[in-house]
Length: 591
View: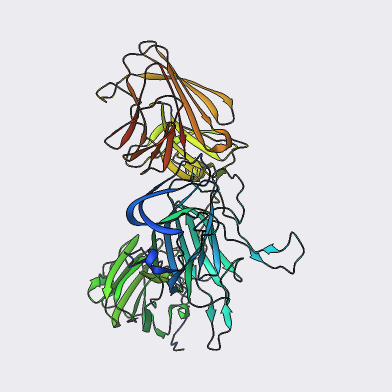
């Protein structure tokens, strides 16, 4: 340790934020796996009806891996030839109705893949769960242990593509092969919803490969429990070593300094050398500016992302001519392509006010590298609010603004919950069903915290259907501009609401939306008392529509199913689905 000081100075406030860069991933296809005895094949297209049990159909040529077990070809597991340690694992998968599978990280730790479509209280054995460990010596009912259920059921319907992303840290071993730290699930996102975070894995889960925990292990896909299809299986290995700051020195200048040129002719009040930023502990309470100089030692050439934020202050960072020496408020981002070796670096941090938050954060990120935190202030806490989540048992219906993608905010939105964990939002102005989702109900933090902005956010896996567009269209798919005035709504029961409107011609609209049995989706019935030449209604986004028979359609690019007992004859026009309409219409959306 090198430390030379005249007196002590508290941490200057510095926060470095990292931003993701383009990753170089390894894509695994069927040829990258061993042990395929015939139940697995590669196809170009798969489909299944969510209401029919345990069936997937595959056709064409492509790189979708599908497991189609049968009497002559019983299902079998796949084991990758390549072995992995720390990794970012991503895949899309489709469950057959009622089917069961799993992905074993390093062949040891199973993340369950299951048709958990209608579960309201998911367990460790449900979709996205970290499967339990097993001990035959324990009493009945206690053999399974250390399984971890997902935070909520973020599953989609069987027959739709679901997305899974796993960030995994492998166990560590010493030179003699003794385990010195456990494996860790940094996070798991299912269909964009975080369902696990920072879960320590104390040992292999049930059904793991023999041999126990390893530093490097294969990806294993369970195939003996039922049909499943997998595509876009990509793995980014986390093997890159983080750059390190070396030969660090600092100079501290007293005063409220907002431009670097202001220190000209001023002698520093403190100079020193440190091995790392954690050693920088001084005691000046007045305003000051600190200049750090040193070398950034890069072990491997590549792209690196740095960021600098000084709360209530100013900062600058530069190396190799990149960045700058102009102090800025807010966040300064720096993305560099660096060769291996040493690179001179300068970091400037200004604390212009005595009350400026004290502390020092410094981080960096790169592809295949865990975010590196070089400094963290002791005792610094950011004041944040606890999230305000709406419990549907207490507040089943919420009026709020709705934010929709690529469109203005909806001002007269209403969100309706159900006790099956299936929910929807509706625009009272346009009479449009805006979105449906499964999981928890609403996050009202932005709506109510610190005066709020009036917006509530869905908490589960969301399917956007509409952006508040016109509901009715003529035979040329031209919007029919009728001024509908809301007449309120009637709550029939939990999740079942009739929305009422009247137009300038005195025509009444009854729009009833109810949750299907088991929470599988919604049923919508629209009735207009007099029809002013309405021919179509717009019901959902989508451009890839496939008929499955029996009145069932799969909107493949949106991951939802459309069905009705009526002869629907849907039309796809410019990325939206339209249904013919006379005086009334009933249809269902399964998701």
